[in-house]
Length: 398
Image (cartoon, rainbow, N blue to C red; front, side):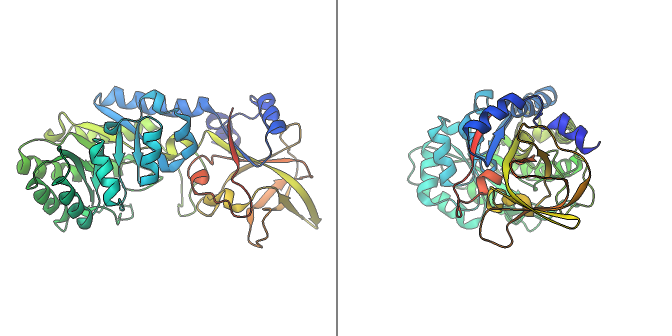
């Protein structure tokens, strides 16, 4: 599938939204993020449908860190999503948005004593990441006046996937030892086994492998505690349809249904998972494709066979440019896509840094006032952007 077909199929259709985008750009200064609510909802509903079709006891927990603006928009919350958070900041945002404690999953390697205490008092599910955190949880269990809900994050070797440094290692016995110790602690309920194998995972076989490994841990927990765990949380990592990450030789994202079928197919092989509630924590898959970034050309300097372009954006607004290339198109002031012979182009940002380069490659002829639109930028760019020199760009829904 070519780039043009990808843009038409997966990303906001600039021609379809032309009048609305022009109206927004007349009222809102560039640079600006533009979010297509239709695509965001479509991604969520596709995943929800695939889960409900294959495993009715399932729950989507939106990964807040992927894009805080989308979290604040409540788009996924209104569809029934829980909140997956990895810091006190994100936990506070989830509470502010009205999530009940039992709808919050608190992950991450660093949670303060106060944050843990608040989560336990709210009845949130806390996934324990390492031994020191487990000791803090055990100490808190003695002063919290009701039973607390915990899960254990585990890590294991998965073929063709970089080993996660987070969680209790399975093959060394760490994970089983953690379950044994928690089982001996009064007022602690081990409700979940959690794993997260990475981002942009390009095969369902990796998820099947992690489910298989989690089954051994779940079996051990059942034998130790006398009751099955309630949740199997396999994290996120489902890819979007953007350009391949720089580290990949090839890039062929599967349908979300294929990932779900791979996960559920393995679940059905293990009796311990017969009544399990499956939890997934998508981020990139839900938001990346549905958000574009528009900036404007300030000046153009032409050299033989080359154009040097200054925009009103900066690299700090699109920090993931270092991780994966961007799909870029040039539009006139009337939002007509520009075509014609392409020349070597360097798009510079507006900061005072010499290395503020947004793009290097081949683009059609550009003039001052044109719009540069970056596609598939909804994941992490807004969350990780800084306000170095300039304010962070606004985000507007189409």
